[in-house]
Amino acid sequence: MDVNHTFVTSDYHFRDWTFFGGAFAESTKEEEMRHIELWNSVVGKDDLVLYIGDFCDGGVGDLEELSKKLNGRKILIKGNHDHIDDDWYRCAFEDVMTEMRIPDLNLRLIHVKEEAKNLEAGERVIYGHAHRHMSGPPATTRDSICVCAKWHGWKPISLAEAIRQMDAAQSWAG
Image (cartoon, rainbow, N blue to C red):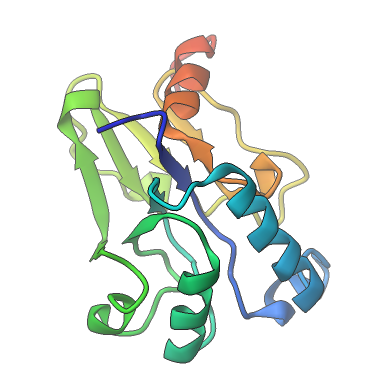
């Protein structure tokens, strides 16, 4: 796996402008278009995006439309807002799963960090979900990083950068 051309991100909640529009006031239709531009500014057409949950709160037509607008090949690790049948997600994603392990890198990707059970020795977690009711991003530790788009300038980050940030962190999570 080419960690420089593999990206991780989560929680765009495309097509649900009311999801963030209330007290959180983060996303409108215009903001969604800007988020697509920001995504495409870092992800190339042939890059791989490991999308860690809560992609689109719209319908199947929205999935297809968004997939065409967003650069990269995409794999979905489902989140708590990804409710439709996996077969429908396959119109936008190469694969769909509830979590992903990358043994060569000792990584587990899952939407909710607390749901990462039975971690292997030294296994680290890349997760999403932590974006609401927070004034700042969750701390990156040597064993975990949150890749919610909100905390990364609405841009996916490379897997190499996620690993670099965990390696640079000062402590292990307790």
